[in-house]
Image (cartoon, rainbow, N blue to C red; front, side, top):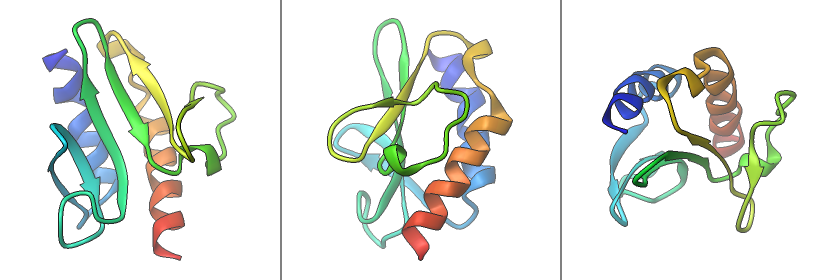
Length: 104
């Protein structure tokens, strides 16, 4: 799981320049606000056999890949079980869309 996180974090940081990443409720979370979790955009949540890459307003994103799975409220996520599950271009597109939603 560490290898997945190490590959995904630079993708997130590059797609969200100037957005702060911090631990919030035990998970790395990228948010626009001054405090962790204030205007959150995305999170990583590690499990024993996967990492969830979640987007707070993920259900509002255009996702032609069909990989985003809807969850609570407006969230959507994708489960990553291997480094090869990371599609940098696709994830960057999702992150930029999510950023635009939060900054309108």
